[in-house]
Length: 299
Image (tube, rainbow, N blue to C red; front, side):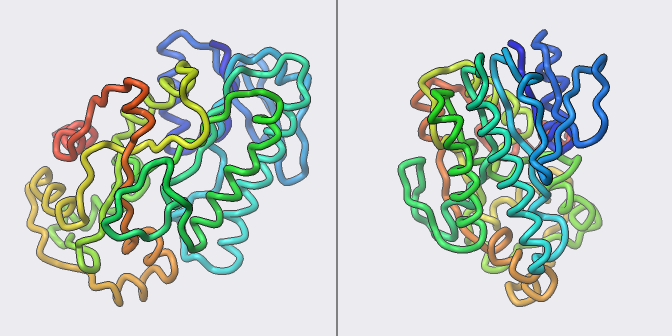
């Protein structure tokens, strides 16, 4: 395939680029700096609404991953505005430009997150479940809606609602590793909140599956089928690392340290199942947490 990729410098995109190239797909990157044509790059500026539609013609597929890191820094008013604008402006610009093409792509896989569902306790959540409440739920709802121009053009749009991505290179697991390796990791809050996760290598395979299986459209949960509570996650990570996990972080301490982000990312419970992926025949390589952690951590 000839694939257009945004967000190629992020945790997922930087792994997706060599993954696609290893499969002999031709990848063109959208970059926010002067482009190097010999490196298959196209410059764009979402903040200024600049993207050359001619350069986008005749791609088979688009994977859109752009957006500021949700877990980086406290959610001040300015930070929340950046989280919203970095997603909305880039997604609207890309979707509108794709809709204007003479030869648009067949499919667009656009990032979203399980934050769409909000804090739902032990309720089982599938793609048919309603949106929740809170900053992340509002953000994900608007983020997905911004793809509408592409869908109206007839492009098959997949909103990939991704859970916690397991990788030592970044994300939540990357931040956990240092305290856990030092033996000072532990349960957060009550420990009863459900954590919906997916191994990074699994996510790459899911993205390729979404690109190549026409039955998938609209929201698709990118989470492993065998979910765990925070307490189970903590014990499993400690066992894989060979370290004790006896230093809990009470909910009040998490809120002091992380502010609003604690409630929506650390203390929130989401039991999110990959119903559409399984119905489409996707076979998980890492359905269980301990083998997934051992794989990504080389243990």
